[in-house]
Figure 1 (cartoon, rainbow, N blue to C red):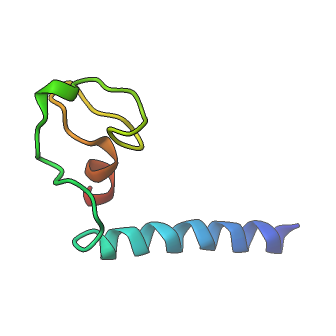
Figure 2 (cartoon, helix red, strand yellow):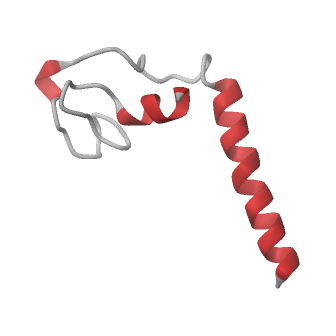
Length: 65
């Protein structure tokens, strides 16, 4: 069971590192790009994690952060 937890944790960390390294070439909107017409949009076609109060894509902000 401990080996399974170790491999699962390593896979999650590897996925996060890959997303951070590949963030410049991923097809995400810019982390500072504002779309006021989609402010506070829930997760969906406007973004996988939704939009914040200024209309910025939360997924791109998390990946670039």
